[in-house]
Length: 312
Image (tube, rainbow, N blue to C red; front, top):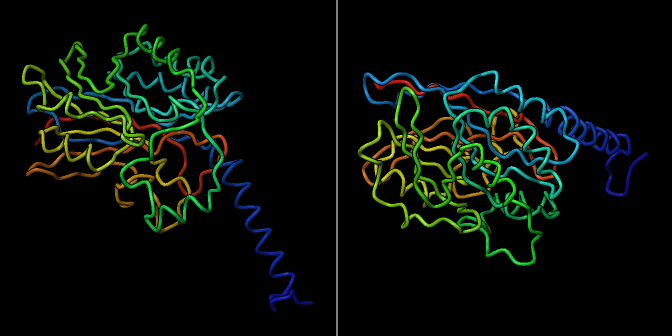
């Protein structure tokens, strides 16, 4: 028996079954298959002791995500020297208590943070096929989204209050310091370029001369932010936002980055050059997803333990 367009019905059924199995795998298994990425970055001044940095990003917490919550709590067992949270903590307006419970053990360590768009605003449903098509064709979003109108307000103030109470440093378009036993660290952060809240002119001027080492922190790795940090002489930049592409093609990689960063640098460690300088760039693939598209394929959720070592 054949369908209207000459395709055997059993072939059509087979394709549908395969697609359904893929969705079940992507949502039921891989989206909850949490991993720890380990990266070594030879970026510190000669003679400086190693630093262990835990980067968490794009948690997109939804009520009832108990496996994610337990996994995040266990990351405290790594005992990092400090934590960097690169934003998009929420995907549910009611999930702040569960988010703070998940991050509670990590807030015992020194830390810094920036917010992303999904900290400020609740997610909205979008057709994922249309999203992929628009991004692949480059029709919008390369310089950030239009100003947000009619969005659901997320209770980000409660997250900020808890982070601040724990001693984590807010880097929203500002600079901050962490004085650790082994190092005095300086940070320069931006608000989210994805919704055009970044204001680099407020923090321009390059690394702090009085610090042992300086880092640039931003949620979404838009080129304008990376260019500014790199041209100013920062040697290490940390970002999130991309979800590593979220839906990737095995043996090929990501189709989209959800910003103007190229897909070759959608996650992990790479470099960025601007203004005659080159920086290391680490983009976290994150450990969550928008509640309306809770799937990941060929791109498992992750956090990263970066070991910063002295330059050769």
